[in-house]
Amino acid sequence: MRKNVFITLLAAASMAYSCQQGANKRSAEEIAGDSIEQKSFDAAIDGKDVKLYSLQNERLHVTLTNYGARLVSLHVKGKEGKQTDVILGYDTAEEFKQNASNYYGAIVGRYGNRIGNASFTLNGTAYELEKNNGENSLHGGKNGVYNKVWDVEQASDSAITLAYTSPDGEAGYPGTVTMKVTYSLTDDGGLVIDYNGSTDKETVLNLTNHAYFNLNGEGDSTILDHELQIDADAITEVNETLIPTGKSLAVAGTPFDFRKPQAIGSRIDTDDAQLKVGKGYDHNFELVKGEGFRKVATVYAPKTGIEMQILTTEPGLQFYSGNFMTETDPKGKGGKGYPFRSAFCLETQHFPDAPNQPSFPSTVLKPGEQYTSKTEYRFSVR
Ligand code: BGC
Image (cartoon, rainbow, N blue to C red; front, side, top):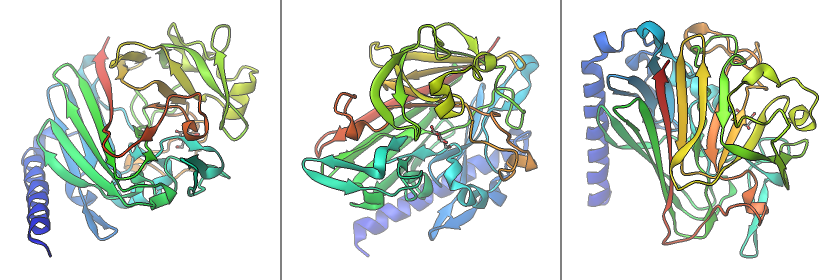
């Protein structure tokens, strides 16, 4: 083994160890109320160690795993200080692996969202991707980054950086791409996700986090009572396989108008062609342009009083209202069922199928360029 590789491995191992020590030290009292146990979460996937890590401050307590660089739990204080875990998941790494195609809490990519016919052409070369959604490729295919074990680069009580290098051709994508994702907590109730990437060959990259939220607490039966507001004047029209047609549809006068807060359930079952193809909301909202990192959406759950604001640098937001969830899905944390529309996803992103849609904001990444993206989920109670 080359000496520098060995040193890097040693550093990574000691980082993982000290992070675990830090997390274990406070596990007894401070993780009380968290259904996930650190030790029982440990596993080996693809021959690599998978562990549970913890970030905590006065406002938030988050657990994460290096399998898929994913969020496992996110405890927020609701009304009367009641601790509420607002994201869906499982108690063990094995269950996350078995149900990888739910994408619970994971970083999805290389291309988050769909690419039509699982193919695209870049500089005259056609690339065939893994088909995992009918004829399309969803969230990076079967070998997407959500299904890989990431390395922990640095960890403290308030931030963790995970890294993954995807080899040239993985899941059909060109270029060796190095990705880094840092999760950090802010003093005012924010969970920030910073994404970085670079490549050795021209490629496309579109990373996002796929947390399923229920601000009433995971396991609650519905999200239809949540009030949602999104700064978008238009959505990206999709066909029956949820691939963009290339057209934008103005939200004014449609069930997609969330410019003022609306209960998610208030118009979800109206007779609307786009709601029919999505079986509910499953659409890219074209965010109103602002200066860089800006607030783009707010969700409020009257039952717990928890409000979540979303801030991002991205041009799009996929709002998915859990339409493909069913009572018969494998049980989640603590054996809880996660039925139809009992969670929502709000995925900050570039638009679906952009590699095949020249009019959409570009997702091309060239050697020498840095891919950067930043999103914050900011929690408060009212
Ligand atoms: C997509 C849905 C898909 C879900 C899978 C979302 O990002 O928009 O169509 O069913 O991911 O979990």
